[in-house]
Image 1 (cartoon, rainbow, N blue to C red):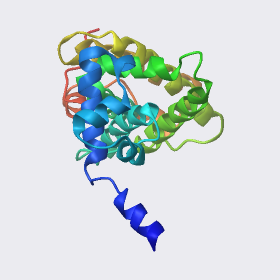
Image 2: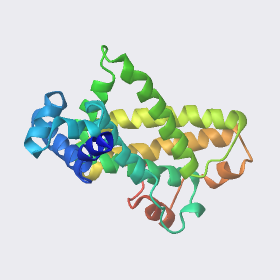
Image 3: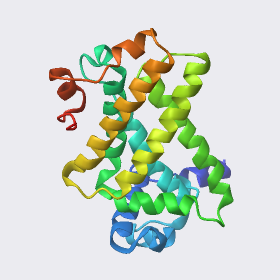
Image 4: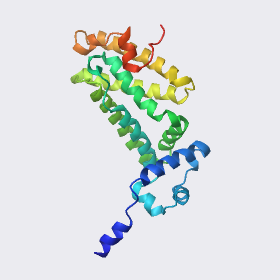
Length: 228
């Protein structure tokens, strides 16, 4: 009974995890991610460090919660007509959802990634690699890319390279509304789609993935297509 009472007394407020994350982001936006300390967040939020630990095992878990927002945004219910769009348009919409979700703290996001890849943090490297793989698998599933065999392997490798290249450019993108990232992503998706169509001619989605034009392009991404 005493153990249950102690456990109940340690139960954090229902919104504490969200408050800790938001305060960590604001603090990092002012002072940098390396300057964030969980004990300071606890003091400033008026809670104990033990309560913060009940929400997050460490600061890396706070970063994981931030990236979870991008997954949630990417996998939200798609707009009407999504299933009828070409594959490259479906991928464009889903990938930009991921980047748009993290855009308010782009610099902090880059600092989080750098911390995960810090040479003295090998315990963070493997989870980061697995999370990248999960992101690509969820992306393929949400975009209804159902190919198997060698085509699936090619899609996974290509999407991973595309995602990482886009991420690198996005971290440096200061253009309004991330327009540079949008245009670059559209161009790369078009190039990848044409390559897949040549490698696997006659497959259903390859034929549907022809470079977008007209109204369908605007409906998918909410943006105009990139100039040739």
